[in-house]
Image 1 (tube, chains in turn blue, purple):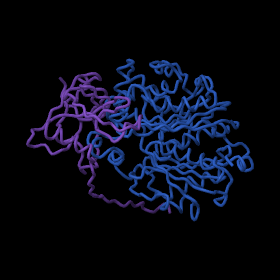
Image 2 (tube, chains in turn yellow, purple; image 1 turned 180 degrees about the vertical axis):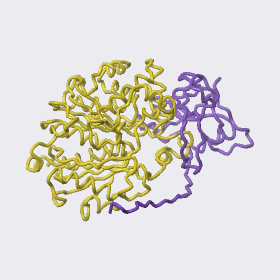
Image 3 (cartoon, rainbow over the protein chains, first blue to last red; image 1 turned 135 degrees about the vertical axis):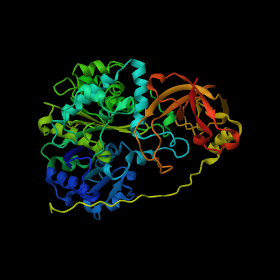
Image 4 (tube, each protein chain N blue to C red; image 1 turned 120 degrees about the horizontal axis):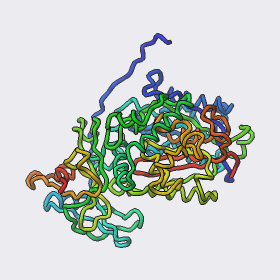
Length: 384
Length: 156
């Protein structure tokens, strides 16, 4: 009964630091309507719905039920999945699993966030152990900065190297009409931006965004009938390690390495730099655009800065990263990982407009979560 | 519609919690409170020594069964100097910034790290690999809280 799965529709809201014009349910509906329109489906064509966000950000804990009007989930199977930062990737993988099982043919996956509705650092801290971790943990930004402190020392990487990553993604965001931050920046502006948590500055880190996304997955039985050119899921991988921040291995990124090993070996990829055509990396801060691509095997440890300075990851380079502008331009967290998948699908379908990577046939979409865990999905223009 | 004033609804939630520390964590915290000693918890399979103690070693799925006395000194593995204000969900108060927190590998064989504050906010004076030492609160004032009983770690 198991079946291959394709992406047959993708919709997103316009993204802003605060969408005062809509409440959460209305925001969700905007993305769902966009995805239905994109795929030419009606809500009756949808067999099941998966939704996710960061519960604590909006302080609504039964989002699956609360959002039924927005998702179109009335009297349908609706499930909520939340895994912190990886929520968007997890719901995408959940949609893939659900359709792949053959029990459902068409699954609408909805990620959303109204980051503007709370002190998100205070809210995010509640992800950590209340007795041992929470008093010192200071949220996502310093949680990443500690990693940068190790990476910089180990390879002599500089803040300027990291700034180049922000310049790239913000330039790419100019091609994406949906991106929140559409203004080019320079390395100097990054270096001179306010120091938030050493060594991470304002322009090194992702923004907080109100926004939502919906990706519609369909099993092979229906995908080809419903869509002229689905983007096909080749494989997914999930690796979670520890819950205590004290246990994280900051020298390397074991979850990303393990996920890539599994994903690439499953489809026979040996040289990701050559064999992938585009990557939508869940890159919440600039240093991740260096260290993590080493963990992915795109280049050797310590070599990422040169690779990025050489333009290899720019649009037009050998392996463009984040044609959408990525997470540094738009970060509605529960949707962030799902946007990576939706953008990857657009690339493979040749529908990415000004941000299209010509001839893209293999696309990688990644997800990152709190204690350095990894969810990822590999998609292809043709079925695997 | 375009002339409608967009409203928002504001509320501050105060929700008290009371978390169980468990018998392993209680033993660990009591040793800090009563003796000023950090104990690690050793896995019999891979011999990793964990702080805080835990019911299983994650990679082995085996219960650590040996308590190992660790030193109050250690190596700063990673850190950040936090420089932006936010509300601490445990207190409802703004955390005083700047402050430095880091992950410290305690001498005596610890495998996992201990997260705590470092009493230095000058980036020039901080670097992974520095030796640090715990500064304990006076014994009479300790309460069985890692945050309270250890004031911070100082660079030595």
